[in-house]
Length: 88
Image (cartoon, rainbow, N blue to C red):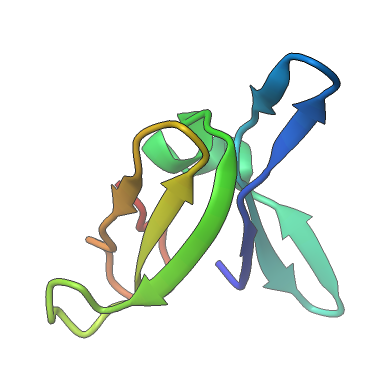
């Protein structure tokens, strides 16, 4: 994956609507939405407010940590090799 975004839509007077994160993969000159095929990552719902990318487990692969507004944080460990579906 090449681009990711965490989000949560504000609802006037009701807080925020939890939404699924977005994950895009570059294919040629375009970016293709691969969120639905990304397993637990694409299935998660939160009011995303922050994202950190880094190698948390020192495995040599980039992992993601998402902070949520008034909710739990999510850790997505990269357990794949290069070029595959890797978030769990």
